[in-house]
Image 1 (cartoon, rainbow, N blue to C red):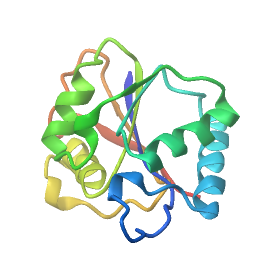
Image 2: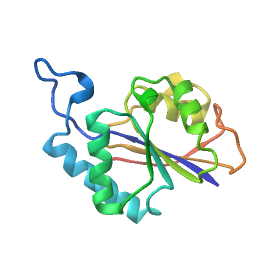
Image 3: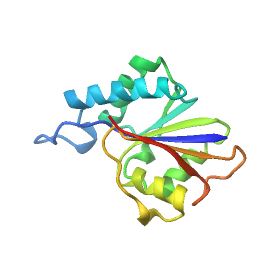
Image 4: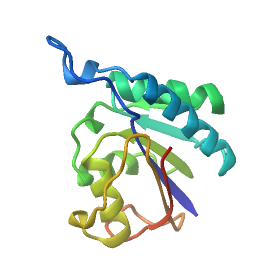
Length: 158
């Protein structure tokens, strides 16, 4: 089996005057949530083989807090993740098909729509994904990433 682990960034601070959305840091609550994600990963199979993440401050801080618990994880910043559609996220994740367990740290609505698309075949069938929410999609190791190919095997948030 192959797994695509989707992690929405933890709670971030509100946008401040003169600040870009990409520069918003995590809040104190967000830091605690991200560490809880790290503990959840350790308890449910360990860290993924590779992490793909958006370049925003809040996604990078989320991963840093996760790794305080899990230890270092190979990571790649993928600028296209920020504001990506579900189809674009599939293309990005598919570049790493040689990895058995890939985690993608990004944003809504792309992540919640990707969960729906991969599990049901329809991106409009999403149910929401809270900050620091994790969705684990499982599929056969040789399956191409495409709509409806995966099963949502775990869904959790702190």
